[in-house]
Length: 476
Image (cartoon, rainbow, N blue to C red; front, side):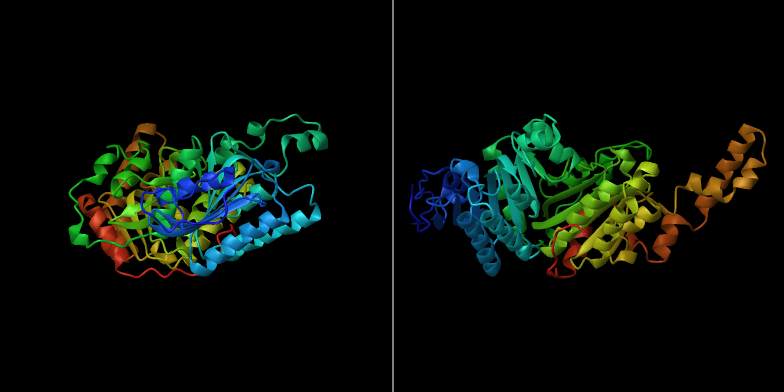
């Protein structure tokens, strides 16, 4: 085993060589595989390291699965808590690499106390420093909760997370279940929402963790709007028919400097949450995705988007909100799933948000979902729309059918009724309703040329300074 190593930061030279599994997993995180300080997992199942990750000063820790399955002892928990608390004092992002069976059975209640101290350290630093978890292999009990308490969770495809493992499930319930079925990557990326990102293997997971540290820890600054090369008609990425679905991810990637890191791509895919750079500065993007559920907001979307907004708010990440939403998903299942309670989280998150945030309506914004998607009334710094966008309580056709229901029902002939409806729709469009009224009343600031989208958004976001503030990221 290696002792504490002060590497001296020799660029491009790997000074530290790890002979324990935990230390070996930490080295690839750091620039040149060479942290400034490495505390190996000798006589302690947790390794720790400090140094530069993508040029950003950061800290990291890792459990050692080769030592009692990575069981969390009092000593190991003390090291994890110390790394997090130290990082909090210095304002360093933290990466935790987890593979552990949970609290040490040999230490019993003492280990449980240590695990609780880790939880307290994570929560104490929540909203102050970015915390990223990488789950490799199995993470059970305290290791699973320790990961879930952090801001972002990356899982390897073969990894698993669960409160109690298959053996305990069998003994307690008589049900035979495997690691993958109980808490595999598919479970936590599609259903529970615990895992933000799934990657193929250990190397991909650590590379993604480096990307996230750079995005959150080295956010950069906006270039001058005049230096941004516009000229691309982003609206050309949308289908010609306003009723046709499309993947909004293509629009998000085209808007940003480079393709975004999309979080939770498999969970609640009707809303997209992503991190990327716009004009050189890290931004968070929230976008309705018409390819899934028509882009409607639902209960899961409320959970997903609200937590993302609160994370961005905590770390001073400006927000870009792309709106193409027909409303909330209706139905008994949504009401029983708590769409009111969980949807209210998104209203709360945007209304409390202090970072710069701008909204762009690309095609439609109807009803309460329009409010929830960072409207002016919730405090957006600017709201823009592309030409032809619809903004209203509901679609024009639906509005006419509700407002003129008796008049339409009085026409017996279907063809005549359809002609009357079309006439009423055209009449409604000619009056100052919808987008025209929204612009008149400054609910929408301006209708912009899609070609000027990037420079317009950058100008709006850079107009006001970001004000990061203390805000725990645990869901409401």
